[in-house]
Amino acid sequence: MSYDTNMNYLSRTIRNPWARQAYTSIVNGDDEEQEFDPNQWYKINMKKINRNLKRLCIKSTMDQATRQFLDSCHDASIVKNIFDSLTSSFLHVFFSQTTTNGRQQYLNLVNHSPDWRLSTMLDLGAGDGNVTSIMAEFVEKVYVTEVSTAMRWRLQQRGYQCIDAFKWPELYQEKFDIISCLNVLDRADRPLTLLSNVKKCLKPNDGICIIAVVVPVSCYVEPGWFSTNVPAEKLNVQGNNFEESVNSLVRNVFNPAGFTVVNFTRLPYLCQGDIYEHYYTLDDAVFVLKCSDSMATISSNDVSII
Image 1 (cartoon, helix red, strand yellow):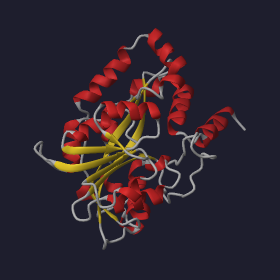
Image 2: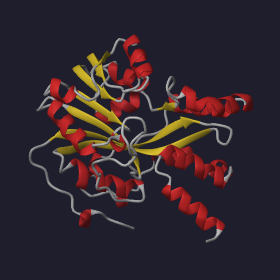
Image 3: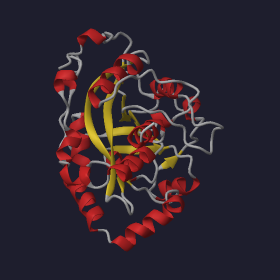
């Protein structure tokens, strides 16, 4: 087996998406970054999107917060990058390295004006609360779940109510106006059960769910809570690119789980870099979903492929 074949095989078999991205960047060197246009992070090939989903697509663009994050990554000194690389395994439990797009992107996605207000929100896997804070501006009472003790402390300092990460479905049925599940579904041991619980806990008529999934989908359970990295429930998702993954997620996962799509978009999922790269990025498919008792299913024949 040749060197290139070995490298490609290793890249495909690394299940953690951040580790796979870092590995690919190290192997490929700096050529890709020098030629890459960040606007490609938001590009969607509409010819490959299911015809019933095309009108629901929201075109996102880079906002000021993302530009500032990228500038800060490029401006970081070599010494800082070496320090971050050497200490990342320790610091990641205290500080979030990821960023997301900001307030206006959020309002565009949910199709509301700045005076929009809700009573209750639940953010699943809220991390350090930076993303939660963008959504919390429009909500009276914010509930969060988080398995990390350090992160729960930070969330409580922000004034959010931390609830049990495993018992919330039993305690808060039909409770929430909005539930966010950002980059959690493909990290859950039982993602289908998670979707079922989200549906139970949304207010039945007007409740919405915001779900972000890294695509192409590669399910991976973080070590520490379960005996294996392979989830107990499988997400039946196919696709090697953003568009195929979106079609498959809606057809094979969200529709059967009792959800219909309100809007969706493509956003970068960014992580601060190390001694090899200024930053790392993954593709996020972000969906706004509502509960639906009667939905049309999506046929693979509806997808127009170039």
